[in-house]
Amino acid sequence: MRVKSILVAAAFAAALAASAAAAPIKIAVIMPSATTDAAFSQSMFGALLAIQKAQGGESAIVIKYTENMFNVPDAAAAIRDYASSGFDIVIAHGSQYGSSIQEIAKDFPKVTFAWGTDVNTYGLPNVYAYTAAAEQGGYVNGVLAAKLTKSKKIGVTGPIEVGDAKTYIDGFVQGVASVDKSITVSKTWTGSFSDVALMAAAAKTHIASGADELTGSSQSVVGSIGAAKDSGGVLWFGTQADQASLAPALVVASQVYDWTGMLKDILAKRKTGVLGGVAYTLTLVNGGLKIAYNPLYKLAAAVKAAGDAAATGIAKGTIKVNP
Amino acid sequence: MRGFLSWNVLSGILNTMIGLATPFLYAALGETFAQSSGVVNLGVDGIMLLSAFAAFYVALTTLSLALGLLAAALVGLAMGLIMSFVSVTLKAEQGVSGIGLYMFGLGMSSLLFKVLIGTVKTVEGFKPIAIPFLSKIPFVGPILFHNDILTYGAFLLVPASWWVLEKTSLGLKIKAVGQNPAAADSVGIGVGRVRYLSVCIGAVLAGVAGASLSIAQLNLFQDNLTAGQGFIAVALVYFGGWRPVGVLAGALLFSVANSFQLWIQVLGVKIPSSVAVMLPYLLTILALTVTANRARQPAALNKPFERGES
Image (tube, rainbow over all chains, first blue to last red; front, side, top):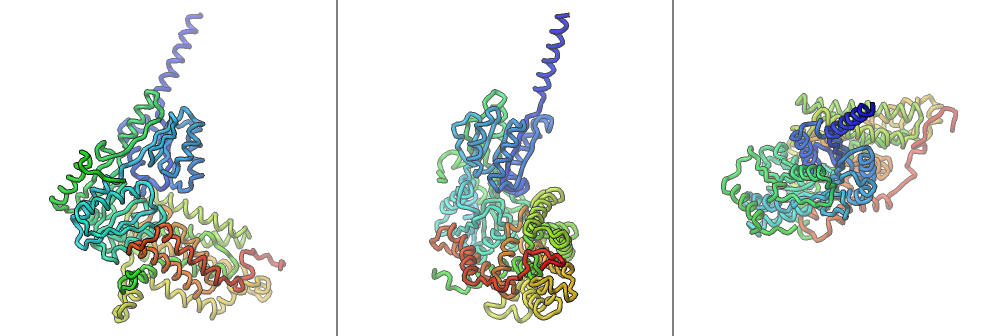
């Protein structure tokens, strides 16, 4: 009888262990804008879906998301809710969420937190930080733009002068200057990540001042791309996500953030018991940043070669780009 | 600052001003009707959002901008009826019900966008129409007479609103129920009916404001497309002293300040961008402080009407 009880208990424990092993990893992501923003949030959401598909679908990874969290206190509440409701990994996809992560992560030592763009893990063993060396792709886009401009006037539309929006534009300006210092790059900041109408007005202002090329960062640049499209011939250089579908005839290339490598690493580390403590930076070298040339835009071979040479130079370290 | 003295820059500033002012004019003139009857509708931004989505979706799927515009107006009307029912029939607190309507519009437009479209797409919106002869007038011609139909409509709405409010019996009734609903009721004016009508006029115009963004100026839809323009429109009604011409002045001031700050940045004037983007708001607050005239405010604004109560 005693042996039988032990066998039953062992079988029960084995079944529990098997079910635990088969339980999917639960990932939650909090984003400042929509999953369909053709920019920052879409880049992370797309990467999560790609990882989910590659690792066996919803039976392997469950993904929940909360979008349009411009309001940081609301985002903090969502982060805490996810952490307390059994999620294994909580991603706070916005540099404004740092202080919330710093506060909440201490209360959930078994939950992995990831946030960015930043490199600060706050010394916590369950916090990952991540950022993108956006200036690298900015530099490549700048080289391409400098080679293609006829008016020698380029407009830049940005949201707020911080984070990867700033570093992308800094890199872009350096890329343009590396080809031709006489080209004027004018910058406008709208003061908002979400004001599409003002971003469009900023783009129209650049066009009215003679710019024949535009670039910019944030989810509101769809307004700028629309203005470029309405103007008929103003070229666009994208960042964060591949923006070619928004204006197939006018988007030359986009710097694409690919978070899949980082996410794979976080998942692999979690399996070994490492819950955080690492800061990731997407670069052209590690494949986290990619230059996506628009196949529908007929880019001259010499110009593309200049862009590729810039990317190679950055990867090899022969070209230094300052963020 | 020498860069500002060129015709190109001046015309650019005014051109951008006209475009930026268009949605404000529709939304704020509409809100003038609602507030003149005594109802503050803080849900204007939500109406703009849901209508902007409706206009965009219908234009995208039917390839008809006219149907898109109609859809926006109908959505505005439906939301106006909801607001009227809650604030006039149920006599709910107007500020709270307006905020509720805003949140409904924000959330529903986001949900429908995700379910029905899924990603950012674009449509061919209303194109600029050059008015013969007038568009050829040097300098002012291209600024004033080379715009899309919704922009012309917004500016024509200013005298039309003035005429309705000041020269028609409907306008007198609207203002009567906004000033003294008990007196209006005693002479046989249906206070509830007039308020329903006024709120719905405002909501339909807010719907057109949304359409002016999604199928005329930006030709796309994205979450929270209006970025709070509806709330600025409500503020413009106070700024304008509940008069269409005052609303026009406010919309133009705010828009020209915004246009000016963009040109400041484009021309590389050495001012921090954070200061530049504050300029329109600072100017508007300053102008509001100087010109504020509460004497014209409808006496029964924000007050539900109950027969028998004074």
